[in-house]
Image (cartoon, rainbow, N blue to C red; front, side):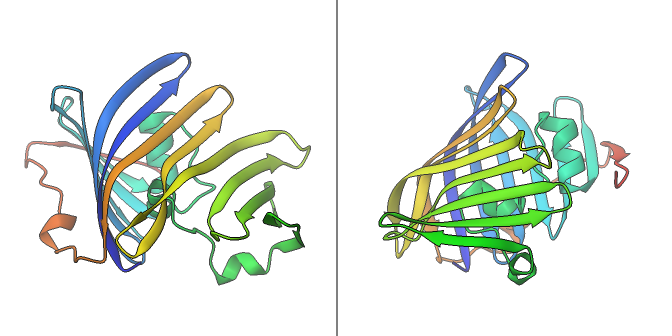
Length: 213
C-alpha cells in the first residue's frame, strides 16, 4: 500500500480512566503519517506528524509542541509503550516487520490455520500469528526475558478497503491499559498530498523537546 486516508474511533484506557475520541489518519509509505484526534464534540485534542522514527505532537489545549523519538513522546503523551512497533504501520494495521527483523527470527511453524513466527530481541521475544489464508496478522505478543507479557496486539475484523485487505479493529493491551482503534473508513492508494502531511502549529506554541531515552 502506497498511501491511505482513514477515519477511526479511538479508545484509550490508562490506570482505569478511559477516553474516547475520533481520529483521521493520512499515511504515505514508507513511514510518514499524520494523525488528527478530536473529542466527541469535534474539539481538537492532538495533532501528530510521524516521520521515520520521530514524531511532532501538538496539544492545542496546552498550546504545547512535543518533539522527539516516537516511542518516547507517545509514552509521555498516552502512557502506552509503543516502541515495540513501527507506529505508523501499527495504527493502520499494516505489517511492521522489515528485513532487519529476519535476522532475529528464531522459529517458524505452521498448522492448518496459521503461520507462527517467533523473534528474539535483547528485550525479549515477539510472537506473531498470521492467518494462513488471509495472510493478515492476528496476534502479536511481546514478552520479556522471563516470559512476562509486555504488550499484546490483536488485529481482527478484516475487511476489503479498495484493493487492500486491512483489519478494521486493532487493539494493544498492556498491563490493564489499552489502546483500541476501530477503522470505520479507509481509502488506500488514492493519493495523499504534502499539505495533508502538514500539521499547522501556532508560532506561540511552547516547544518541549524530549530526550532520546
